Length: 386
Ligand SMILES: NC(=O)c1ccc[n+]([C@@H]2O[C@H](COP(=O)([O-])OP(=O)(O)OC[C@H]3O[C@@H](n4cnc5c(N)ncnc54)[C@H](O)[C@@H]3O)[C@@H](O)[C@H]2O)c1
Ligand SMILES: O=C(O)[C@H]1O[C@H](OP(=O)(O)OP(=O)(O)OC[C@H]2O[C@@H](n3ccc(=O)[nH]c3=O)[C@H](O)[C@@H]2O)[C@H](O)[C@@H](O)[C@@H]1O
Figure (cartoon, rainbow, N blue to C red):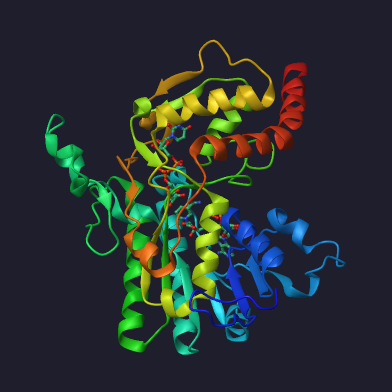
């Protein structure tokens, strides 16, 4: 990695990164990237390590002395401050971030996304350490366009739906719509970090991911996660495809999302890590505006791609409609449309996403099939035998 330079042509010095939530979906890809392509050290903090165990064992791996796992729950562990002090940069990924939890476990959601993140911000600020904090595109909530009459021509005007870091408002539902507990907690921690920057000089970068997807996202219920758990849409639909059952479309599958391949998104995070002068003080949308689909279109595309990669024909009724109340329970609500404006990240870091939705689904579903198809078959034959 010798001779690597940043965007301004300066040599990149190896640093130590305290990565909280390193054992999750994004953390595992970021650790992989840092081990394979850089000389930086990682103090990996999480309560789980399954998704990074290939990076931790055996001790003979090339990067063994550059990654250390610390099994710590940041809610109640005094070792956290010491790790932040040892590092040059802290990246906080820890959170409850599955929508099925927002309305059913709103207290855990708010504590996890706001209260538990507070000491991390405080330790960084007090010790003069740089912080990259993971927020969410959900802080935008609904689009302004969602409130226009259905047939209004203004709905087609990007000014009413493209989400911009420095000008778009944050539009959430009423308090009994507990779906917004997550977005609201994330918004408040963003405001707190911004204020620490303004009043106390904290060097920060806030990342707003827009539906990053890929291998190792969430879990497949009953195989490597709780059998009753509800993961995010990629894992829900993968689970349905693997079990040859219809994909469930919540409230008609009309909501729109832009999906980005995790590997494209991780490139953006590495640029933030290695270009502090360009990233500090900024909030960045990280998404792929070219990959927009409705959830129904996503289901159709995943069905087609899965058929191709598994060699199995699709089932007769590939999708069924289900109400959000049935699927998520009382208090669910949804973001209607999420297209990231890319002006700021383009200007500061010159970054652009590359992978099309079809291509990213092809590599992700190939992984899902290879990793889970056999385990699902065995689990299903056991259930039938009983
Ligand atoms: N994946 C996305 O597209 C996406 C989109 C928007 C925002 N985000 C944000 O990015 C971050 C990471 O998301 P992800 O998709 O990797 O989620 P994830 O659930 O896979 O990873 C989060 C990790 O944090 C760990 N964690 C949670 N609470 C902890 C605690 N108290 N102590 C120690 N570890 C703890 C979990 O064990 C988990 O491994 C989250 O803050 C999330 O809100 C992700
Ligand atoms: O990924 C993001 O950028 C953010 O958005 C996600 O929220 P959301 O996109 O609503 O979550 P998904 O579970 O991925 O659902 C996407 C859409 O699919 C629908 N869905 C989900 C699952 C399913 O089986 N069927 C179905 O129709 C949901 O209702 C929703 O409209 C999560 O809140 C976070 O992980 C993150 O902050």
